[in-house]
Image 1 (cartoon, rainbow, N blue to C red):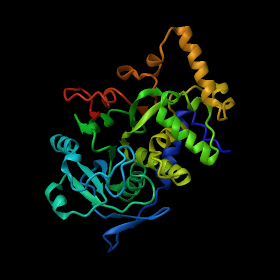
Image 2 (image 1 turned 30 degrees about the vertical axis):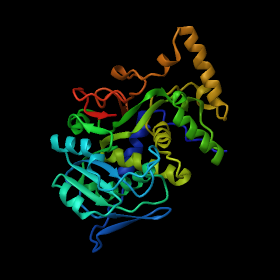
Image 3 (image 1 turned 120 degrees about the vertical axis):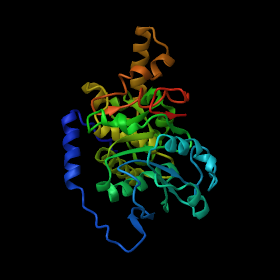
Length: 344
């Protein structure tokens, strides 16, 4: 039975890891006659060569070759309405973006591609659509990392930009990771994450430290920051996908596993939580303790499980920024919001 990596306890460990990552980064040779480059993973993936439109770029995907794992059907290709709100907000805020697509339609690309928004064709591997995108993001970012400064990754069908997020990124320490938040506060309240955890336990015998259950839940629909921070995150996520990857749509859980292991989130350092509960009974014990605390504090389950969006002490740490004003409260989508990114 394996156990996920115990987290970096100190911010200095995380920053040292980032510095080592930067120094070890290979300088890629771009003098190729090909118009694509290949990704060597479980299956051959290819990405069209097309330079990013600026130093600060937004990355997103519009994939149609497989069923969407959340909607349970295939999205139609060349349907501008699918990305219309996102696209128009990028144009309105004069942002620069890359959209990866897995269908050929020159008429669509010629109509909607511009100097600031590029559509890039790619082929996918054997994971779910939502998981495949991280391999595409990683390899594209790695290939062009010397040309970039900051990166923001978002969903496309349910996200709009209310302000320029890169202005907000610049006001924080360079090592900060900006990431979305879920509507539930901690892992132990998140049904979808608990289901995925059980699947990995059944398939691989994977166990989780007790304090993983009381870690904040983050959302993969918004990820951003310095190019090195985002590249470091993607590298770690893709390692997990290669080890545990399937068509089960694991990206939310894997994001949280990586943040737990490498990005110093706010989790208890209590040795009882950290080491003792390394079994598949961990969740039951942790939830029992939580219920006792709720009873002592006269708190309801809904109150305990809700994110405090305007003052997210749980979600924010010295290395992670989330919630207000980065993005709106999850699924509270108001056009007059003061947040930078709006996520339905």
